[in-house]
Length: 260
Image 1 (cartoon, helix red, strand yellow):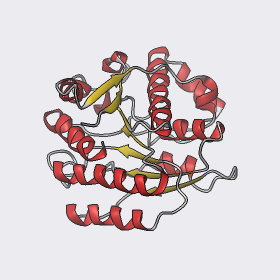
Image 2: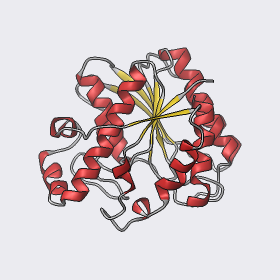
Image 3: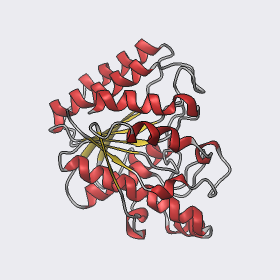
Image 4: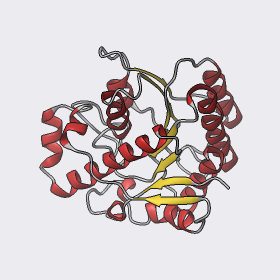
């Protein structure tokens, strides 16, 4: 059996940094209860915080200073960004990974943020690899219910030569949604790494009321299949949304079963 690295830090359990649904008590516990029940399938690894230099590749100095005004918020946001970096580095080295991090990040732009996000974890992690000259391109699948405007604002149409192909699926039926993802992947070329903004609020029992666990397994499988075709299997995923604690762990596990 293959083993998937799960990037997680116990500090992520802290729910006092915000009053939003992503910070609610019990949310990450619902995921980690499933993860820790399957030690043969998952291996938990612990990250370090991102540095200011890491964060400043994606954000303005003014934005960084605004987040620093709240010490707890900054601690956890920097730790989430650090978890994203660790996940990316594992993936580049050939070990697929899923980062159970919070706060989420895909609504954080260079100089602003909203939607329960503070630092753009995807951008921080990809730009770290780009700065180290490990990658020149990436494919980003954002299957959260809400379009990751921060991902788009930071990563699309860059002037430094880094190319990121972003897909936010728009289909309104679950099997069409999976089909849309596969059709897009079929057209990809010259991709160095795959990453997912893995939001589970599209779940059939979550806010979006669209995707079943088997659909999440198919999304994970497609990430695996096409990353293996295009970039030696280099792939990772970062937790974004997902708010029904009763099914969140099941949906994450379903995705990971395909992804591994």
